[in-house]
Amino acid sequence: MARVITMREAINEALDQEMTRDPSVIVMGEDIVGGTGSPGEDDAWGGVLGVTKGLYAKHGDRLMDTPLSESAYIGAAVGAAACSMRPVAELMFIDFMGVCFDEIFNQAAKFKYMFGGKAETPVVIRAMVGAGFRAAAQHSQMLTPVFTHIPGLKVVCPSNAYDTKGLLIQAIRDNDPVIFCEHKNLYEHESDVPEESYAIPFGEANVVREGGDVSIVTYGQTVHRAVEAAESLASDGVECEIVDLRTLSPIDTDTVIESVENTGRLVCVDEANPRCSIASDVSAMVSQEAFGSLKAGIQMVTAPHTPVPFSPSLEDLYIPSAEQIANAARRTMAH
Image 1 (cartoon, rainbow, N blue to C red):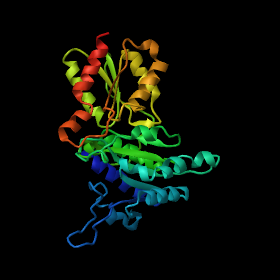
Image 2 (image 1 turned 90 degrees about the horizontal axis):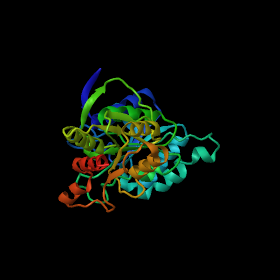
Image 3 (image 1 turned 90 degrees about the vertical axis):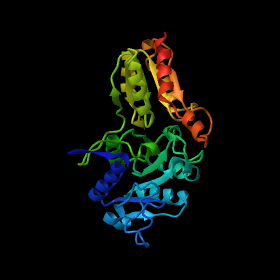
Image 4 (image 1 turned 135 degrees about the horizontal axis):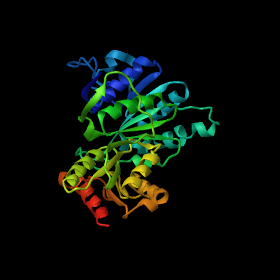
């Protein structure tokens, strides 16, 4: 049975259902419990934005507050995963990867390859991504391309509550390390989500909107900006097809190519910085695999190649807008 819940609630429900189903699932991170038993607190805070609130009351010490040392507890999570546990570690902000990146890209990502496929590391690292939260340059980056570049890691970035629940359940059950990116501006976004447990396979994009004129390929928060742009363009007689990648590694090449072969035009949208981004990756892939189908040059809409500004007005300009996406689509239609 489906009901409307937020993305925050979908994450909480996925964790709850998987911890109930599998006793090897544990959760660790900074302040994911904090507050329980203290004066005036009957329940845990559930992290900086309340995502894990209520889980400690159900699952007790399988949720662990950690010291403010990402290198320590991400390393502990990777080690636990190598020893038959299924840890979900919350990195809080993906920007904090700098102090624990070795454990992720040099250890977790490589164990299976270094030990002839005999070692599995089923760890999920949850992290908030994205700008627009007035959190300044060190708490606002879209670092999805950095992790996508590393072989051995799976990278997920959902755009809605339904996908979030299904993809997080799949991530917890997956036997490889998964970087699960949650856009902080989408925590309150609501959609229909079934109460029962379900998993969405990795590497399967979702065609959010069908159209025959321009393909818009994106993920995360910018899916909603793309929908807004498509609605504006439809009033001018331009029908856009929107492909939500959902997972960046593995990436659904077939759906992207099929869409471009149908429309002949491509706009790649990515909140990450432009150099070596998901947008540039998709652009290169389409140029190589479907060049003959293109009727116009590929357009990329990304953040500028600068740190995220703290000024609210500049931060709003930093994030790809529906207007920018619509203008990029119009440029492709001019040819």
